[in-house]
Amino acid sequence: MIFLKATPAAVKKAAASIRKGGTVVFPTETVYGLGADALNPLAVARIFEIKKRPEFDPLIVHVASIRQAKALAFVTPKAEALMKKFWPGPLTLVLPKKKKVPDLVTAGLDTVALRMPADPVALALIKRARTPVAAPSANRFGRLSPTTAAHAKKQLKNGPDVILDGGKTRIGVESAVLLLKGRRASLLRHGGLTLEEIEKATGPLAAGPDGGKKPRSPGRLAGHYSPSAKLVLLGKRKFRFKKGLRYGYLAFTKKPALKIKCAAVLSPSGSLQEAAAGLFSHLHRLDEAGVDVILAEPVPQRGLGRAIMDRLKRAAGKPLK
Ligand code: TXA
Ligand code: MG
Image 1 (cartoon, protein in one colour):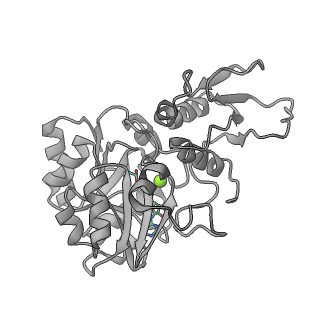
Image 2: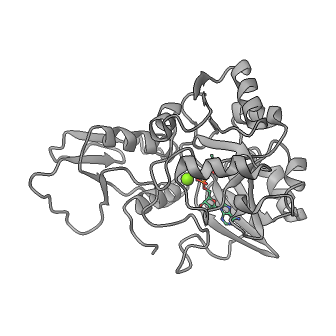
């Protein structure tokens, strides 16, 4: 494994590794991804191995242009309008797939998830690799997503061939995942592009990710995005402390009145952007402090707050509402 600062020369090296069937950790504007040549099933298999990810969970394919997307999926005018409006950016579109996408990438589904990331390092890497790049978040399956290269290295150890360090990611939560099938559009995952922004372009969506009983995206399981510590999402009911356990606290705008040693504040000014950008970093840090339980305050359920609450609820292992 080589760990490189994401200079143009390093991106060139990483792209060569992808062309040879290697795996590369790279920054995007949302979280770090673990990428490989999406058209090379052996390379894609390495991603599942390194992440310890079950093969029923399909991957997002990252592209550097709409033209590249059209080679992989059937792009309707409606889908193309969304690409033009929101790409490059934190919106993943799930579309009917073309034959050339390997089954391992889509877990045998007849759809493929596509996204054009906005981070210049990610875009340069995909362009240089001259192939679409399949990449899930660069964490062990079910664990906290990485917003720094160090987070990814800690979880994946020497698994990937190259790690590109492009600093802290700007948005901090994963992309929104929108399913477009026939005339239907439904949101499978809240993310970096907010529901409000999406609906401004699409009109009201049929159902949100919490609308149905079972998650329609195979990877949307309760218990995802979990720190090692047990996470408790604070609610209306009073919380009882247990003796002998070490507690950490994730506050929204201010430290709690309670005496807790490890407390983190997501955003003193109440900005949901700032809260999303720091969410996983704070959880990584609380985990490293070795607490047994992390108490997390809820944040307002609007804008990026929906994605934050989604991650906190899943980290707490709560079933969907
Ligand atoms: O921001 C992001 O989206 C990051 C960066 C690296 O791009 N990637 C990411 O990938 O979060 P991952 O694998 O951690 O999450 C992909 C989600 C999973 O919930 C998966 O089940 C869903 O997208 N997904 C992928 N293909 C799908 C498909 N064909 N149908 C339904 N859901 C799909
Ligand atoms: Mg993930």
